[in-house]
Image (cartoon, rainbow, N blue to C red; front, side, top):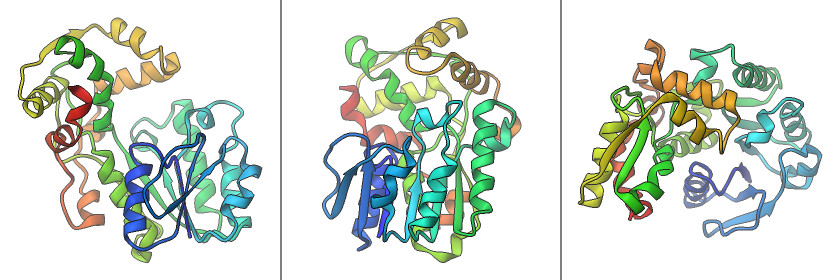
Length: 279
């Protein structure tokens, strides 16, 4: 049995689907009651209380570990989840980390994530670490303004990074959970090309079959909007990357190809599959 945390999100849902289609028993964990793909068992649990995961992890052989936002906060103890997993008999953990651990290692959240990676390496379990860059699904922030005004508003309109389709992250996670060859691997996951916000807007317009106007926000305007849904420090970190990506953040990684034997999907594919959100 495989336990998938964050099972209702952009990565967890397609991962759960892939694992059930591969014939595996899956326990899909989230904080709230929801529907999950056919064949999976849904359990409501809170990762912020690792001791409550004992019945979820009992009998599981593998765990996909995706941390919710509060588990990145000061005082959180995500390492306890690894301890509970080991105590429950889990043999393999695939951890969703972040590319920032390598590219911007000194922010508080990245320091904490690097420490969690180290805890996993030292746990005695089989492990794989996934370090994705920016997600294509962040474009959903623009869905309301596209629906209402046919406009995408974003900062740094002509500065791009190689964002990745979350479905590709899920596909790599499934491979790592199912195949011993990925044990001990650290995968940096990006899309196939650098793409700017203005180019993303054009791809969404093409998927819709109707024009979209691009409006460039100032950094202060963007921070004010982002601070409504994330800590101001994280908003600043994100804007630093979007506005001035380092060479390492501009690099198109070969790791999706290495793990899956195929190239990562371009943003246009993500836009076409998710076009209903923008109608």
